[in-house]
Length: 132
Image 1 (cartoon, one colour):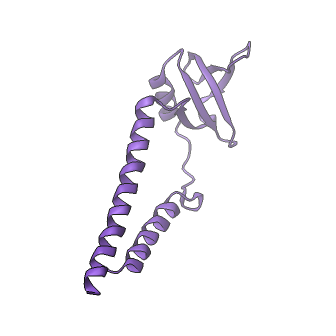
Image 2 (image 1 turned 120 degrees about the vertical axis):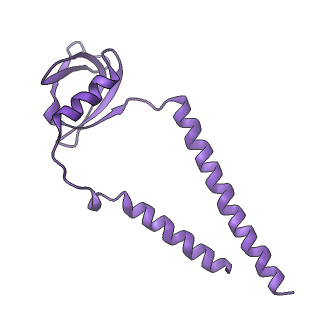
């Protein structure tokens, strides 16, 4: 395999990976209120959370209470909690990345860089042996 071929294969894999995250491929699934309630309940009262709403806005804050049809979210610095219906939510996320998650991301990026460098150097080495 020559160096240009390695670069072409790497580029194709990267293109496919980036296209897989495109909004074009996102399915317009209906909101499942029970699933959103379970996700909010998994975080628990007093925990920081970031929710994505159906109108493509985000709300961040601490969960104050969890009810049957809605939950209360108190933004940082606000006096009043905001009542949010489960049917309005399209996503529930942690407010911040944990240290463990950050370490995993850094290790994955480093591993990918080492792998790509190894593949390029291996191709260069085998290509130079052919020229001898």
